[in-house]
Amino acid sequence: MPATVATAAHPTDLLQIDAFADAVWLEQGLSRNTLAAYRRDLVLLAAWLRGQGVALIDAGELQLNGYFAARHAQTKATTANRRLTVFKRFFRWALRENRVAADPTLKLQAARQALRVPKTLTEAQVEALLAAPDVTTPLGARDRTMLELMYASGLRVSELVGLRVLNISLQENVLRVFGKGNKERLVPFGEEASLWLERYLQQVRPQLLGPRQTVALFVTSSGINAGTAMSRVMFWNIVKKYARQAGLAT
Image (cartoon, rainbow, N blue to C red; front, side, top):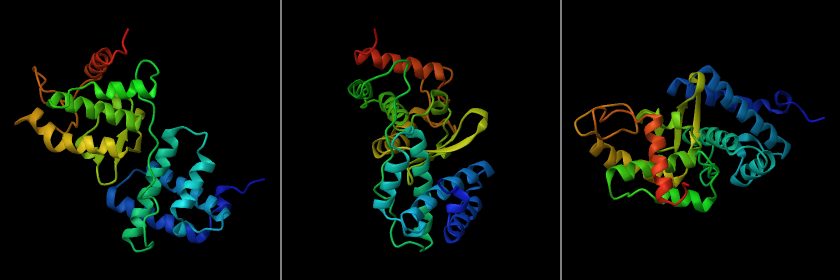
């Protein structure tokens, strides 16, 4: 019978995990549930690593890849990516605190997830949809950014349109999302989405807003609601428009 997480985790690893949890609580004020989830994910990793004869703080890229191959080959991308986000934050903290000499998660990439559209799309169809917006225009660049981010993160439409600027960390390529029941979670995204987000924030969003101010990340640009957060209905209409342009709509 396999050992439980509580007995498999080494006391030295638990001290590292507790120090990290204390640090992120002080720095970012994360909720108790979020901190508990962080700790649970790290304890699972530490237990698996000890089974390989490696301490948590000594883990390298090879061991972390081995963990994901062993533990997440059959799990949803959202679960694997959530844990990858936690591991990246832990090892960045450990590097900053001089507890490790290098960040072993630096080259680890989040798994791309299925785009949440009304029907299942192939990879080629998704690429056609992403390429549909005219990115030489502010609206097209905004729409491409939203599609890229939804594809990279697997967010629900309501979560996507509800994002605020402060929910984005381009340094860590992670979103702070509040879903159903106001539950908080951290969602990673890849380099492609990060590049589009950076361009949108620096060049496009200021053009769409003009003199107006809002905390909403993705904003409208015309009509009486100009400069406000986009609605779910508005975004789905945008998706349908690009689906027709890409030859995906019947």
